[in-house]
Every structure is written in C-alpha cells, then in structure tokens.
Image (cartoon, rainbow, N blue to C red):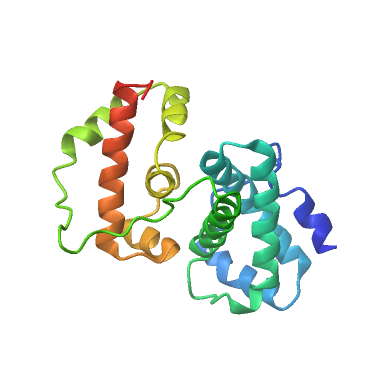
Length: 204
C-alpha cells in the first residue's frame, strides 16, 4: 500500500501545498507514526510536488528527480518513528531530499565539490549584499535564471534554492544541511555572486 502511495510522488501534475497548516502538522505526524496511511497520504499531498520541483532544480533531470522524490518519501516513511512532532516537518523532509540528491551525486561521481570547507586561515568576509539582492529582484526571466542555476556549484545552488525558492531562514537552512550558520551565510553570498557572474557571462 505504501508503495502505491509513493508511486506518484514526483508527479508534477499532482496538486500539492507548501506545507501542512501548523495547527494540523503535529496531529498528522503523530497519526502517521502510529501507522495511519491516510495521515501519510496527507503529508504526500502537501509536499510531493514542492519536493519534486526542488529536486528537479538540483538535478536538472526529470526522470532522476521523479525517482529521487519517490526515494525521499520512502525514506520518510521508514523513519517516521524518528520524527519529533515538536520539530518542523518541512525542514525534516527537505533534509531527507537534500541528502538523497547528494547521495545520487556521489554515486555518479560527477560533482567533486558538493561541500566546500572554508579555510580557517583565510575566513571569508561577507560583503554587503544589498546591490546583488536588488539586481536579482530585477531579473524577470525565470528561465534564464534556471539555466544559470544549473552552472552554479551544487552546494551554492542548494542554499540559493532553499533561501529564495523555498523561503527557509538561515537557521532552517543550517539545520537542513547540518552546517554552521555563518557557513550558510557565506555560501549564500558566494552563490549570489556566482549566479550574478553567470548571468552577466552566460557562456562561461
């Protein structure tokens, strides 16, 4: 039964909402943990489309995104007992999705710099992002931005997607990626700079 439910995960035509209303989330999680397939189906309904879109932007491959989305929700189902109903369910699902995608990257061995470790001898000083943010807000062609994002390093792209497309806070992104808060801010700044450079020079 659970495989039938998850079989449609990743189907972009399936309607989905951004999140389960907060007042219902705890109850839904508790019911799902107790074995309610109806409760788990509610989680799928609310999150499968947005997770597919997120995974698709990370991988740029529709079929892989569909498979990885299914894998994400299978992992979620198998680990329901570990979910703390007091914590943010959305962040938990995005953490599973991100780790699933990065496992796929590693198996393909096509990305050697998934995570970058800052050199403690030369800490990155975050500059004022005001101008960069203004420039990004003026960009109206979503397709151009999507194409440019494909060229951004995976970890930078992940942070950009979580911050701008999924509306996660710095703290939430740090929790999802298991990274220090300052590292998240650094990656976001570097991602903005990288994206801006690619948009100025699309053939690099």
